Image 1 (cartoon, helix red, strand yellow):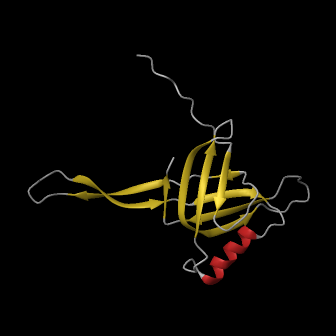
Image 2 (cartoon, one colour):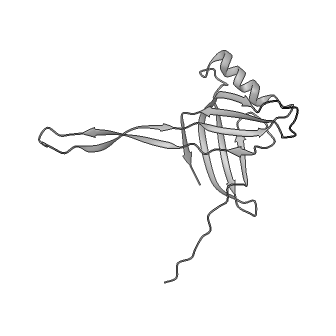
Image 3 (cartoon, one colour):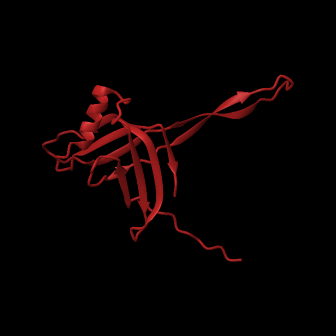
Length: 148
């Protein structure tokens, strides 16, 4: 039997969809990590061994980077959370990260549920540089799942 090899996807062709926000493009997006804590458990009848059980699941932050433009959507979202808190009805947004293949076909999809900004920053101003200014938005979330 011959095993068919499948090349892994490359991470440079992607799309970010944020509910209610129109953003042209991002230059970088991080897929958050998922961690499951372990809880050591020892039964009363076992004198020397303990075994790990699964505990709480936590999700890392999603980081989005894009060139700074006159668009204010991301900054305004961060300001809304800063002033009203993450519990505000429009503060939490669902986000989808879509990875595409070389033909532009959607191959992988992650859904980020109830995300909200925890950090906003830009690169510094420098008169001796011609680098593009980049704004970064870091987001916390309730959870994430990969559906494709």
